[in-house]
Length: 413
Image (cartoon, rainbow, N blue to C red; front, side):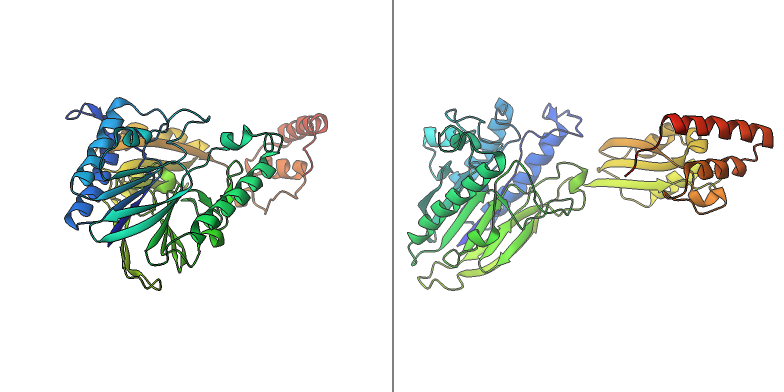
């Protein structure tokens, strides 16, 4: 049985975009749809049995008609080929308050064949061309669902998160206990997990989120744990695999170095509940590239713009979303031409920024080692001497400096 695992498709993200003349939509919408098409084509070509979409189909809880049309078009392609599609509601799919429908509920309402929607913690047996598989769904749980209950509405944010975590773990354990051991089983969830890393390489410490321990998901009665919510692909546990598929397309420069794609898992339908995972691989898609080019202009650089252009030449910028960051001393700021830089970047898909950062004077240029512990007046005197200020003027500036520092003493750390 071939299972495709993806999440965080985020149709509707249109930052760093320009008009697409053919579709009359934004170029970034086309990027996200093209990456999604790669997954759909792969699933059809490889005759997948099941496609898991673990939350955040859209960027917005209120997607436009165009966004809905394009998502449904691709889900329908899969369903019409007899591929089972399992959609888990994510935080971007769910309204902030209880009651209103999620962005995915339309599939259940229309009873579209081969498409299943999970908006609550439950277990469902899915019939595929190569056998049955049971899926426990753990969608994004809205805090509002808890805060509306009297036993939770007076809790602090920290205690509320803890109460949600405990309730979800208890509910999850109950579902796992009731699994049929003769069938392969998957947990499909949109959730924050404690061991996950964001694209900026920091641990997931989202203060407003509840965060489940990885060990609470890595239950030996499960064959695979498919996660969404974190955009960086990663495997948090090996047996069973606990996996964030990551997003299909880069959202911003924080994901510049991330590989983008989806997971393809072959699962045995044997009644033997040991080692059902026969193969696992991450399939990369041709996501839009992001490129940051950083350049430092030194005092010894005679022609700053030539150095910048030469540095740009070293990078493949064609069809990429590019930002150029130039660090330059204030005395040479005007020598850096943004116009020349932008002309050099003409082959880029989109120029996100050309930023000139003014850097402070190097401390070693002042003729002595200066750091935070050096008294301010001593640092000022060294600064004035380095600039060959004559004696009379220096005394006057030092007196003025002493007065200012007396009236506005630096804050102690």
